[in-house]
Image (cartoon, rainbow, N blue to C red):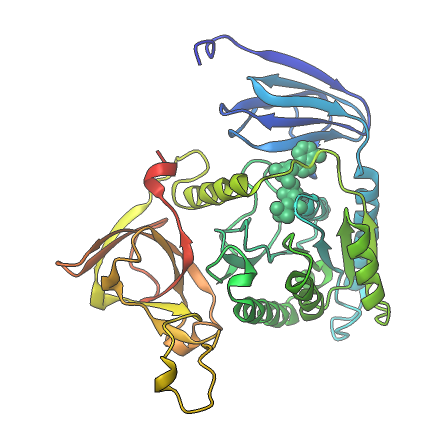
Length: 433
Ligand code: ATP
């Protein structure tokens, strides 16, 4: 705006165990700690150094012992709060820490005792699940553990893009702006923003991810002892609830943290009471959690795509690549064209197999603006059980020249010629400019 040249310096003094809650406006915000110590979602801010926070970010600067914060810029809102659930959250961390020490001290040959806590965070939408997950991971990493973060929320995709489930080791407290590291991530592409599009596929991928992690843990006592923190989606009734139970079971969760809903807590407590090795813990939702409408979530998804290809502040330029139609193969999982009833044997059900892999005709132009996953599968029938190396974004389909042009975040040839389509598309021209 017209006044952007003038500085908007503001100092805020925070008492012990209080936080400054900020919603960044459409302009970036600069912030630093001038006195004392403070952290953002479990990750400590270095003293004195200015950090720039991107537009629309919502976060809190929390202090255990008191701090003075300086802001430069105009925020959407900022206010201090001295009522937070942080003490209860850090108490959970302390218990997890003790369990990690026990696991580390056990013989690696004892698969049960050497396994650190496997924590799963559940709760309705906007209860602060992702935020609690970040805190637990950053606090653990600060103490030298390397816990594994597992993200099952296909709606947001905090490790990579929406539509995927993924896991990654966390070796350092999370960067307060950059979020989760991507370079060591194990990613499976589901292709839709909600599990309801293909529940069986979602389950199959969760299963696949859990098995691969289990295999990796066998040879890695350090990761085993540090355990996992699993973030889930906010869909908690009906099929959503069943999927939570499946995740708890598949990942062998030992601690279930229920945020902000009494009913879900008592339901889980009840179904899990026969399992003596699973603790179900109820935690309060923070008053600072910002609710998001469907439209805001939709926009957030677009920004995640933009971030993947262009970087957080559009500092990256993706690589354009053109390939002939016959140099690659695109597949879709489930829901492909169904055979007409007349073509099926009498008495059989025309419902398609949710895990069936069907080729997509590139010449339909339907792929324009879609995001495709680059699969590690060598054959189409390995697609469901294969993770993906990354994603490309289709910018042009040239029917006459039989060529397809796409953007990729890194240069060079694709590690595989098998691409997977879902139902997610992104209008880069609208969002990225
Ligand atoms: P979903 O179910 O959609 O994944 P969630 O339960 O994971 O949501 P979060 O993503 O953790 O919720 O929180 C929602 C938003 O509120 C985020 O933008 C987060 O940064 C913000 N937020 C969380 N806690 C605070 C706080 N104490 N102060 C300010 N903002 C906060």
